[in-house]
Image (cartoon, rainbow, N blue to C red):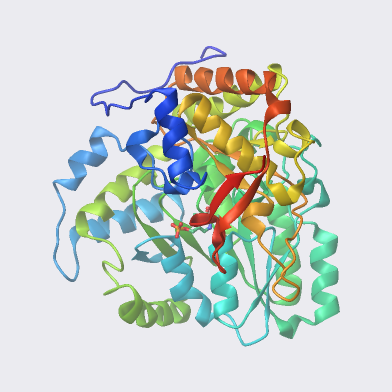
Length: 459
Ligand SMILES: *Cc1c(COP(=O)(O)O)cnc(C)c1O
């Protein structure tokens, strides 16, 4: 294989995108209160808001849609999906859910007693929300290096094993519900977890009699990083690595909108615990649907069944992770400060470093998002103080430790020419970065404000 390989697919169908004129972009973003969530997708040239549900399905997946068996119970697509899960993940039992949070909603009440802690490397926000809704408390026990954007570490999603052990000792094992390993660690920037660390977590879990689950949205990307970065795995097949990884857990929740390469879908899968599966089957009916379809139609289960088999292909993963790395490398070469090393699904630009003249309460990463749209019709997302919000007691704006702009790359959607345009846009902005202004609210909702807030530039 060549060092720099081309995509292992060719394009059969295209969707037109357009760069609308600059004056129109400036008007559109002003109309929506300088909040890119309010933009219409047809006014966007390159949409990097998320990699969730935005991937391109293959011809094989589209063909599978035509084979949807929409029987209420016992659809053959359910059994096809069951076979894929057994073959790739190695687990015996599963129920489909409409997406990842649906799986969390069904599984967590069976695992958490009021007031118990759920121990994670770093919880995704819907995971944390569902833990708290079920009376639990989510704790992040990731290594400290995860919080340092400049520190090179091959597995920044790893648990700090000392923190994990002392937390259990401190609070008492009876106050801990279970351990959840998020692969890759989304909230830490798509950073992988090593097999060594997963094994160590399992050892701690066994010592205290706790169960290990996975939040498995990007399981294949994690396996690829293990193959590339961890000694002893360089000659293993991706499928072997995935099986080993999941062998250390009792079960998983998965948002299939990421490594399932479908636009909607999720699941709970369990290795062998029949009793827990019985609970899941009972819970899923009133919340998602009958256990053989959960939250999905037959055709969607078929697309997912095929997506799982495609995502574990090494040439696909090389091209996928390689594209994110390519964008990171080019931005770095252009002198744009980014999180290092680059994670699996996104590049994070350090807006605090790039725009030191804009204080946290004027949202530097949001200012950069607005500028990026104006410059080249690119939609990114702010992960910083704008997202974090206010202290619920004092109503003071909280200061996020990091002010990041996330460029999230959808799977099999854009080419490296698009990546080059993103880099050009940043180069242009970098030349006038001192002129960028901070933002203040004209409308600020109380909860989850970043989705619908309206802003204005501070003159
Ligand atoms: C996306 C995601 C979820 C939630 O899944 P949805 O499909 O968006 O409901 C949970 N955990 C992680 C790590 C995720 O990336």
